[in-house]
Amino acid sequence: MEGERERLGENHPLFLTQYCLLPIRGGSGFLSSQQKAQLDGKHGRRHRPEPGKNYVAGIDLAGEAEEEEGAALRARKPRQDSTVLTVAELDIPGGERIHRQPIARIVEHYWWTGRKHADLYHQLVDILKNVWHCRRVVVDATGVGQPVSSFLKESLGSVVIPFTFTAQSKSGLGFNLLAVINSGGLKMYAGDGSEEYQQFWFEIEKAKSQYRPSQTMNFYVDPADGHDDFLMSLALVVEAARNYTPRKARGSPV
Image 1 (cartoon, rainbow, N blue to C red):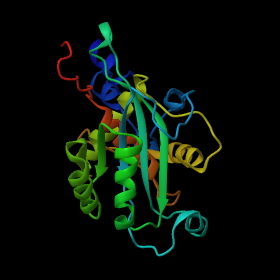
Image 2 (cartoon, rainbow, N blue to C red; image 1 turned 135 degrees about the horizontal axis):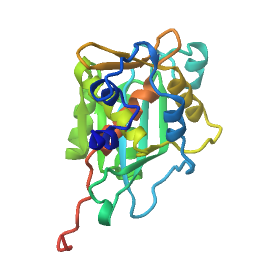
Image 3 (cartoon, one colour; image 1 turned 90 degrees about the vertical axis):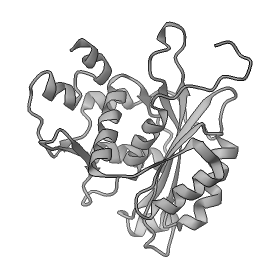
Image 4 (cartoon, rainbow, N blue to C red; image 1 turned 60 degrees about the vertical axis):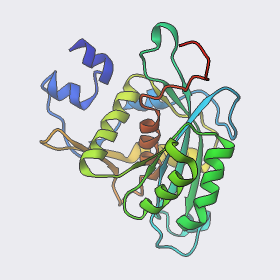
């Protein structure tokens, strides 16, 4: 029981239901005030990598139903779906803590509204490969996202991991996100006054959760409140960080 408390966190739904035998209400806020405080980091946002650091990314893809794009579209239709790319820097534990998961610090967001996927292909490759040198990229491969994930995998190779959203896989994504936040393993950059920062916290505040009898969950932003692109991209970057270990250079000691 203590091992699961440490792994999941004492506020994790699975720990509360399976070990504390407490009921979980559906439709409530996805994150508690305590979890939001844990997610709120103090490091600054960065637009380029630091030497010697490891970076991963999560990409949530939008639909392609609009002809306009950018801030003008968001202003006219504030509920318009967007493509969001989240970049996180990994703090890899060493020494006695080597068995622990890396701490993921969100350092950058990219946000496109109304852009056709085909128009983003080469920009995404450039950002992931030439700017951030991402070690792992988890991309939404559901529906219209499949061609994008295929293109990225062809261009970047095995660092790209397609993720298909189903009720079961999304549930696992949500539980993993909660566990990482509870453990202190995920931090958002400090406020910088940007639209991305404001939208991120708007979605975090509006996010809801729904728990099913099958011990699965759904997490989302009610369409009446807006979209959950930043939230899903956050969950995907956590998936990219899970169980990551840096490659050792040839000839280096084990």
